[in-house]
Amino acid sequence: MDYTPVTPFRRTVDAAILKHQAATQEDLPPTGANKWEMLRELAAARVAFGLSDRDLTVLQALVSFHQKTILGGNDDNLIVHPSNKAICERLNGMPCSTMRRHLGNLVQTGFVVRRDSPNGKRYARRYGDDKIAFGFDLSPLVRRFHEVCEAAEAGRAAEERHKRLRASVSLMRRDLAGLAEYGRAQRPDLSVWDQFSDLAALSARDLRRKLDMAELRDLEAMLAAALGEARNRIDPSETEDMSTNAVEDEHHYQNSNKESYDLEPCLEKAKGEGSAPASASADTDNLVSEEMGEPTPPDIGDEKLPNIPLGLVLAACREFRTYCDGPVRHWHELVRAADILRPMMGVSPSAWDDAKRHMGPEEASVVMVAMLERFADIQSPGGYLRSLTGKAALGGFSCGPMIMALMRREAA
Image (cartoon, rainbow, N blue to C red; front, side, top):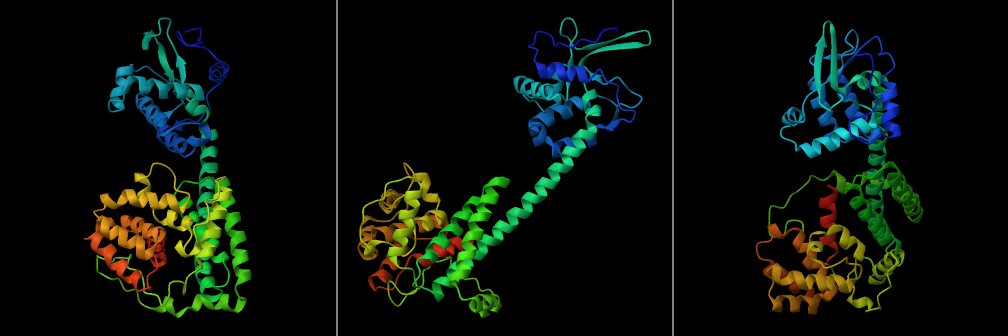
């Protein structure tokens, strides 16, 4: 055919389509491109070109209609002309509307060019030695092969940098959690350790998401600042001895008692001994509320607050949020959520009232949401809660070890 059309049949023309159509007028490179290698490289660089995995699936189906493995070279007939039905069959029954949407994106990005016939049909005819075909032109795959390969290499390098930065942030988070625990034992007079523990717990939650490079750098900067402050609060000679802690040399022992299974709290000599003061927890929670733009709740008394910050509880316990009407930002909202959970978990009203009386409503609520995290391992939630209530009545119970056990299980 003497004339090559540049506009599609009954479709809107824009500058991008005209640009891609004009590019096909250039001569093909002397060396062809392996169509399967092209697809692999394009899969690695798809984000740079704005393509989805479904777009590549449709492109793979189109490429499969070309009989040769090498596109271009001595073969300049790169137009395939399958029907919509044939394409959908090779896509394992993908709906035609879905296929057309992904095909439109391939045309818009310039990896496929439409060569529509006068009536919009796709077909091929021979006139002696000449063959005229109307359908989808795959020549952009050959012309852009080197461009795609370079983008794929850049994408792999960026992914490698992302993995390395993510690993560094994960190690920094672990170090901050360890320094906070060590510093709390060495300098219990400082309330900053709760803030460091809270930051480490929230960082662990963020790392479960797919963070981009900017978010990882922001998190790295926060952790680096916190680590520097934590090291300054701890004596340098003590920090050097942490790597030779005798506890790390002991063999691991796993308790097979499914009733307790990482939830059994330790007995303490006194309610406030060996743990951060309640006032530090309240200060941390108020700080979180102020940063989120929420009003600070009224003071309900330090003696009623658990010995851990609310942010750490929310980071360790997530199952209960399914049953909440809205976000939990204050202790009274956690108590309301625990009241909703109580009948669902099979805990009697009397057991719940005893727990709130001896532990306090806030600490009893922490116990309830922590039990929900390991609900499948607790044979009798009501009986288990009563046993913890008995320990609380003797003044030797703290919910802190329960939450820390959940955090360690999450970080493992």
